[in-house]
Image 1 (cartoon, rainbow, N blue to C red):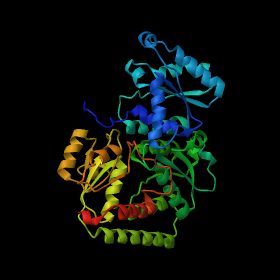
Image 2: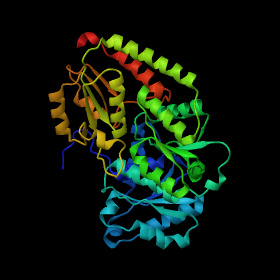
Image 3: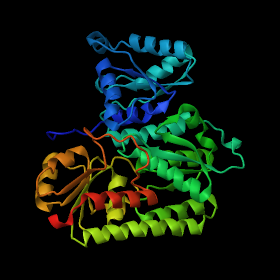
Image 4: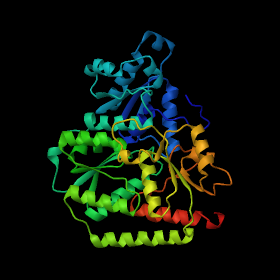
Length: 418
């Protein structure tokens, strides 16, 4: 096990909580110490958000663990069911309870006849993988066990779902807004449901009505396949960084939805992006900058593509999590170009060897590179400990992302330092 000065990897339990806590009208009961639940809820503030769900804890003591008693869990679930009358209650095991081998799924089956709400076990426990695996399994759970069969209610208006917009992505608000803007302005389609950032339980119940799904992160691909198997809903993978990727994404949506888009609008936006890229290249004056990028898998690969469009080729990529799960978009092509889940010791060695001029990454990487040789650092990913990001009009993805990041780099990078 590695030693950590900064942030140890968040567990799958945290990914599950982050995914569920952003859903308004969701009810969650966690079986475990109150401190664990409190820490998880308060920890959302570091992601620049607050819990939207109603989350409760049972607390436990030594006797509960030693004797395997679940009286407090039964009482808590019964109270939430009676007082609030939710349609579903998500039951989670804390990491401590998972060690004791408590069978949350079995407890839910045993309790189900005594409550009106449907009990849904989300009992990953915190030791199966990191937070990205928790996001993956929870999105899949929502699509298999929560989304209702309302596909027959599809009307004449084409709608879509967004799968894979979670609060653990540092710029999720702006990227979600840019995604909705692209699809609305180019196709006139409205979003039916977002799984799960800033959504409601009712929207998720109705996700089966959508005509297609847009998957914004690789961890959402399993969930999209569930909806495709259940309702025949096709999906498009889309987290486009850069002009080329955005055009490819629009073409994929056009093909999937059988709808053409306004070519004049596209040419106008491409022209605006080209002007921004030209100004950036003029400002940088083709300096051979060394870039180090860290963050989630799809963000890192996407930023690399954007930097290539900006004519920067020397990019060191760090994925700050494991790649647990069957599907990561484009992984076979990227396998020899990524440093996946390195230890802090490995990263420090890489910094010394690569000597980056520009660092785009999480708070830990920015701290590790806070020396004179690294002239420019800009946060683009979590973990986060000092940056606030509330405004939703500064995307990294889409045409908006090209213009915004070109502006950021123009204003912050002084070429006479290289």
